[in-house]
Structure formats: C-alpha cells, structure tokens
Image: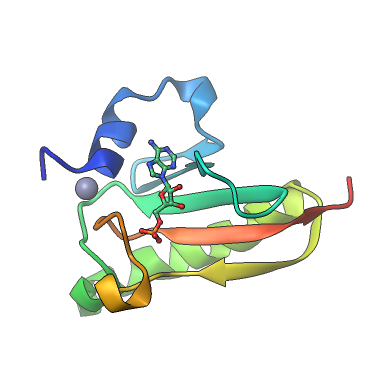
Length: 107
Ligand code: AMP
Ligand code: ZN
C-alpha cells in the first residue's frame, strides 16, 4: 500500500490540486489525458480494483458514481464516458480502484 501512487496522491496533493475531496474519496485530473476533460475519482481506502469490491463497499461506490455525474456536469460535459479498467487484461495500470471520466466540455 505504501508504494501505491494513488494512496500517495491522496496523502500529498495540496487541496487546490484536487477537483474534489472528502473523507471517503477524491478526484483529480489524469496526468496523461485521453480526452479534453479527463479526471478520475478514487476512494481514500486502498481497494485494488473492481474485483476487490465487497458488499461493504456498496455505499462508497454508489457515492463515487454520483460524484462522477456531479463533477461531469460541473465541467460542462453534456455526455461522457465512465471507465473502470480492471485487471491487467482489462488495461489496469494503477492497482488502486479509480473511475475515469472522459468527455468534451461545452462550457
Ligand atoms: P488505468 O490504466 O485505468 O490503471 O489508469 C491509470 C491512469 O492513471 C492513467 O490514465 C495514468 O495517466 C494516470 N496516472 C498515473 N499516475 C498519475 C498521477 N501521478 N497523477 C494523475 N494521473 C496519473
Ligand atoms: Zn492505494
């Protein structure tokens, strides 16, 4: 867990570097954007991937999905893609659960 880049981001980013942060999750821009607007939402808790989710995380993942929608609207996205790469075969590179939000702003 100490080697996890997203745990480190949760610990060291300054408040202004986050798009959003509360006691359960945070959101920040992807360092290598694949769309004009590309940010991700991660839990504070180190959860390796979608496949590590259990019933105890249902409330958390629900809140994260709602936050994806709220932040997409705040960014002026009329439509967007939500992506959770899962496992090496699913293209996952960072093994701390994250929800990608990708779209084009009309602001
Ligand atoms: P995935 O392939 O779904 O695991 O996505 C990992 C994402 O994390 C990639 O899109 C990277 O560009 C992004 N990423 C890696 N390191 C950082 C970082 N320090 N800050 C922001 N995004 C990062
Ligand atoms: Zn982590």
